[in-house]
Length: 218
Ligand code: DX5
Ligand code: ZN
Image (cartoon, rainbow, N blue to C red; front, side):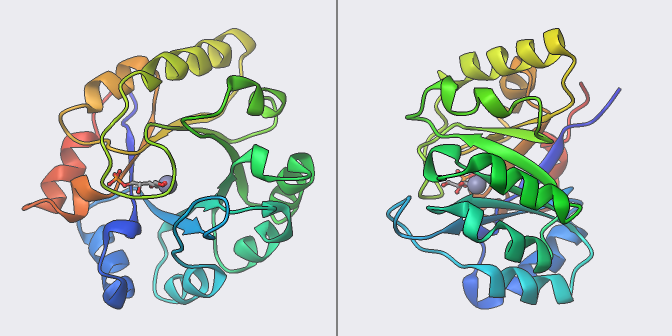
């Protein structure tokens, strides 16, 4: 039996106390720290970049899962790795050379992944499935925290899991957006083994309990 990995998104934390938020995540028993990087071009919102990852890395030994919602990620993935990311995922349709981006991440000794946004066809990630450590399936349209979980994305999750099993691939399957204790079972039933949860953790009355309730066995 394995347990689902919970990766709370610091997008929902207090930006004035980011280092504290990351230490809190350790105390709450979170598995990974999900860092949402937005550039205001690929998505309409802007969050933070490499300097934030680097600053947080100084005070934390946790696994940093960096989700790049930026254009031309191939230009920046190396620097995110050097700044302390353990996993870097990006949206292939935003890249002029997704293969180069994956190779750069791997050459830095880090884990790599591709993201399927809610409005994108499966063909966007298909060419990379044999090369990645993780496939992230968005369960909201990338850009903002606190949106409602799109249940119809579970069908895509099943498809990505089926291909994984059929071809013997090793990638993690991560869902991101609106995941919470009340929908964790359907996420896992569809094939997810890593979940991002922003509001469901940071806005919870008892965040440690929220994390634990999503670390279910599968
Ligand atoms: C959306 C981000 C997510 C999201 C998670 O663009 O990638 O990581 O904000 O936040 P919740 O769990 O609140 O949807
Ligand atoms: Zn994310």
